[in-house]
Image 1: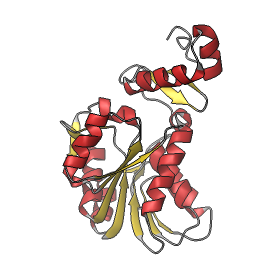
Image 2: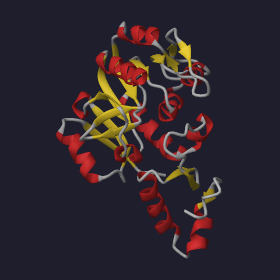
Image 3: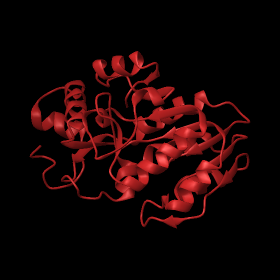
Length: 245
C-alpha cells in the first residue's frame, strides 16, 4: 500500500521485489485488496483506489483490470448468437463487450457513445443510439428520453454492468437515473446478463435496480467469493466463470 500511495501504477514484478514474495503470492494478495476496494488492478500491476465519492476518469477505468474485462467480454459474446438484438449498458466492462461483439451481425442499442463507436467502426452490427443527454467523459447516454427509448424495445439480450451486486442488498447503482435505466433494460429482454468483476460483490450503492433472481446469467471471474456465487446460483441465475488475468 505504501508503494502505491503516490498514485502511480506499480507492476507485479516491482511489488514482488519490494516484498520478497513470489509473483503468484503478490497477484493473489492484489486480488484480495482489489475485492476490498483498496486498490485498482491494471494490466500487469496495481494502483491506489480513489477515495470514496471521488469520480475516476473513464480512461483510467478502462485501463483498470483490462485483461480480465476482455475475458469477461468474450464469455458474454459467447452467450449471444448471430442475428440477435441487444441493449448494451454503459460502463467500461460493457465497452469491452462492445469490442468482443464488433463485426458480428447483430442489432444493438448502445447506451454510450464509446460503445456505439466501437460497434459501428466495423461492418456487421446495426447500431442504434437513443436520444438524450451525453455525460462528459463517460459518454453515457442519460435522461428520461433514453429510458423511454429502451422501454419501446423488445430484445433477446440485455447486457448490464452494476456499481455493486450484493446477493443480500441486490444490484445497485450510485444514481437514481442509472438505476431507472437499468430497470428498463431488464424489463425488455429475454436474456438478462450481468457482467461484473469480483470487487463489485463486496460493495453496495444507494439505488437498487434489481434482485439477483431478475437475472438469467452472471458472468464473472473464478476468484469471486464462493458464497456469493452460490447465492446467485440458488436464485436461479446461470453463473459463467472465467479465469482472471
